[in-house]
Length: 155
Image 1 (cartoon, rainbow, N blue to C red):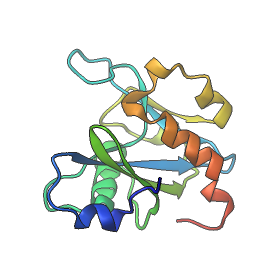
Image 2: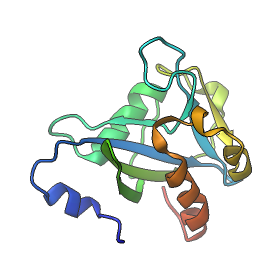
Image 3: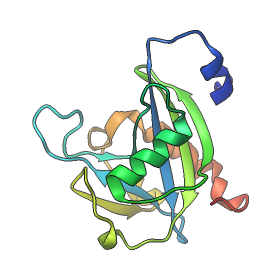
Image 4: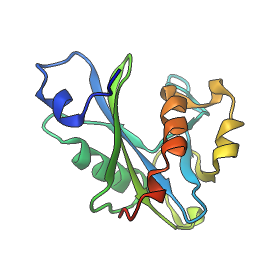
């Protein structure tokens, strides 16, 4: 079964599903950055590891969304993140981007979440399913399996 493309999903008639965006920041050691969500009552997946990202607002493109979210939540200014995949999930359409990033996590001032941390493929595999938010495990697994960071430069 083929995965939908971003263009095909955007061309569909209005869908009842929300659209979300996420991004794989990849460092020189091929680790990805995850965010430990706040441990707040009523928050979905409290105290769980999550991909950086957020919900697409009306009139906003997925690229605009991920750039806005990373600026708001981490103070990062993205210019042109690469699209990794678009996944039709049970509750949303998820547009996953990726970008190379070598920054000190201690210098990032989060406005959401408890902390951020770099994870290797093996370290992500050791996170229990109930501690990984929003059904991201298959997408993360695909990212490490397909290794887009080995195919050439990305911003």
